[in-house]
Image 1 (cartoon, rainbow, N blue to C red):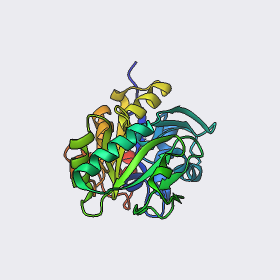
Image 2: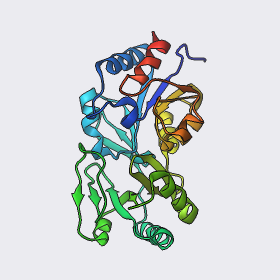
Image 3: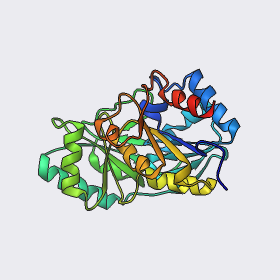
Image 4: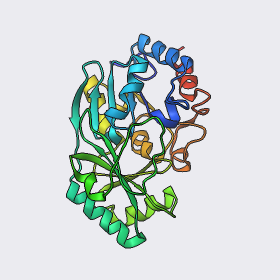
Amino acid sequence: MTSALPYDLIATDLDGTLLRAGDAVSARSRRALATARAAGAHHVVVTGRPVPQVRHVLDSLGYAGLAVCGQGAQVYDAARGLLLHSDSMDRGLAEVALGKIEAEIGEVYAAVNQEGLDGEMLIGPGYRMWHPHLPTVRVLRRDDLWSAPINKVLLQHPRLDDDELTRVARGVVGNLVNVTMAGEHTVELQPPGVDKAAGLTRAAAALGVGAESTIAFGDMPNDIPMFAWAAWGVAMAAAHPELLAVADEITVSNEADGVAAVIERLYA
């Protein structure tokens, strides 16, 4: 049966997309999403943040659906507070990948997201935290990053910008790990096959929705797999050029409620 809705599933990135500055979701965006849900559409948050760094946003939204977190590594049931799926990263592989990258470009600064509902973000020497609203724990030695299971490694370089660091890392270890640029100062390493499309596929299957009925919103290269999977991809006005190049549509910025502007048009 063909759905009467324009799209049965709305997948939204958070940072730079649904969220305004300060981790805020505007009243307009809340109303637009509520209208779409009332019409029968599902809303799934798809974010690079792991569950512990996103729950406060979900709680502020009164969010009771599934959330794809940790760059696709986690599927979280917000209504029940349960982690339905989690992909871990082998810590030995992470160390090997870092070593190979450093052999090519010198020292990199590293952080990790630990697995689980209460996993911490550990920050190694030199790493600069880009987001003032997220809790972190600084460690004195890189070896301390491997103290518990992780789902990803985050990298920074003292000289190379994000795009160049991503390009070099892919060239050196792209056969071992998935390398993605998720935002400013946020280059990440994860197991092969872990990305937003993989996580969204799991969440959509649980909801009984297919790619052909999905619209996705994003702003960074880590959203490219999600755009490739979904029927329609909407990039924010200030999105990274790599995402703009593959978007089906470009909306206004997150600060101007670009997600809401499209939803209002579709579900009015």
